[in-house]
Amino acid sequence: MEFGRRQFVGGWGAMVTQAVAPGTRPHDAPRASPAHEDAGAGAVHERFMRLAVEQARRNPAFPFGAVIVAVRTGEILASGVNATEDSPVLHGEVAAMNDYVRRHGNHGWAGTTLYTTGEPCPMCVSAMAWADLRRVVWGSSIEEIRRTGIHQMALSAREAAACARSFYSPDMFLGGVLADCTDRLFQEARRLRRRGAGAARFGREGM
Image (tube, rainbow, N blue to C red; front, top):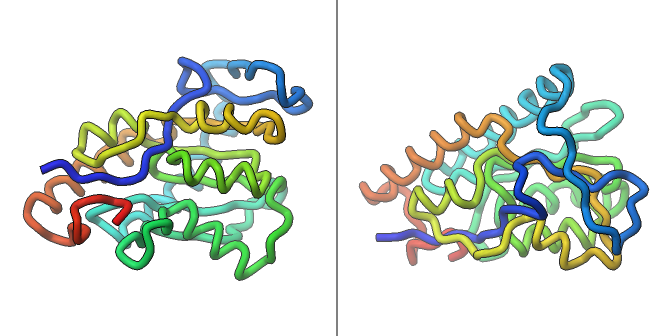
């Protein structure tokens, strides 16, 4: 039985690593960033992704966890995990954004980076666009999540963001960080759901 979750991962371009350069005009085509980052930046992204993984472990059947980090200081500003059994909109990213608003108010988004274990779905990317949250890093791709039996919409994160190009110009959309680790999370989640442990009521992440 296939299990469905929100979908929203993917890409403005063919590269896993791709960002819109600061200062790019909204209507300009996004540009691909280099295929690698310096070791220091990569280590920072991995450190925060591990925190997102910790959040994801709170829902082992649907391990979509997220943290929001201050760009300048590295402070952990908010966190969240998929809670769609409580509300269909509570994907991990939205849960983290709600936590951010509770703790810091609805401002300051442009100075943050959101780390999430799975590529964001169109709903979550839309929330990021309305908030002007410009930096997003994820682990597993939508294709990999689909392979573990969770339904995903056929629209990548970058494609969803491109639909908002008239007002939204992200600085960084980066996928594949600690993907080996996050992929294992989703693979184990599939085994748990097959055993009936913690599956969502209707077998879909969004329900």
